[in-house]
Image (cartoon, rainbow, N blue to C red; front, side, top):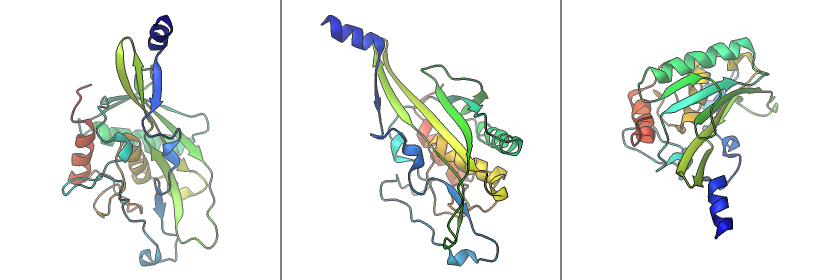
Length: 220
């Protein structure tokens, strides 16, 4: 019994997804059609059957389904993030804060707080590929149980592929931050979550409804 009490006091954490790095799953990022190629030649990955399909809202990531995530996030930038990328993600933060559904603010998150880390990476596509990966992002949800109760936390990431100048776009940052907050790919071209970058600078009404579904059960 004393051992069990000590374990609860220390906190027991489990990965909700069952994977420690769900942010790198196939198809989580946004792509662009290389110049000289028509968009029709690019294979667009279909919405996974694991996604929550909604008639009126943008699909949400399976990992956040039925999770009571807090609406407030602290965000920070990794050391290797260039100034152009920082600017794009700061604009993306303003876009999501403007909805009033989530509250993203700069800073380091405490152990019990939601966190977003903005990063950068290099990935050069093979010559035979017809699209370029511009970024990746996604949620990483954990549940920690202690004597104080259960804490649900999203330790999310959003990154741009700085190998390509096309990645330094506000629209790409908005897309990847959407993944971090729990939005999944959409087949609706009006959505910022459409897999191919279309330069969308504002969330569609369906994007807002999808975001609201993720955070509708909590106030802070």
